[in-house]
Length: 113
Image 1 (cartoon, rainbow, N blue to C red):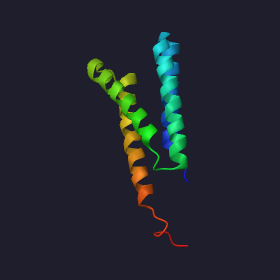
Image 2 (image 1 turned 120 degrees about the vertical axis):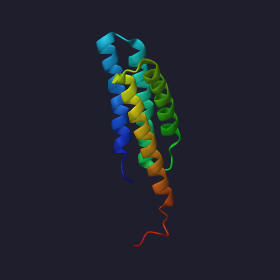
Image 3 (image 1 turned 90 degrees about the horizontal axis):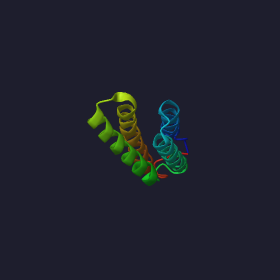
């Protein structure tokens, strides 16, 4: 099974964003949300690395985070950090779904030895 590199990068970006939010603005909510979502997304990337069709946790966490940050971007108009995380969430969501469908269509009968 190939490793979900994009999922791990996305998880690390979210966690790093939470840490940066704390360092720059002393924001405890940014730190906690970043570390919690980063951890959940990291575990979701681990799950999809083991089985590309096991996307439930990744889809849920990505959708919730993308929705929250998309709403914040809509209200504030600020690209950093809300707009960027909303864009990354859309990319990660599409990548996860495409990877899952690709893996589901690969059947042992279709593979030649």
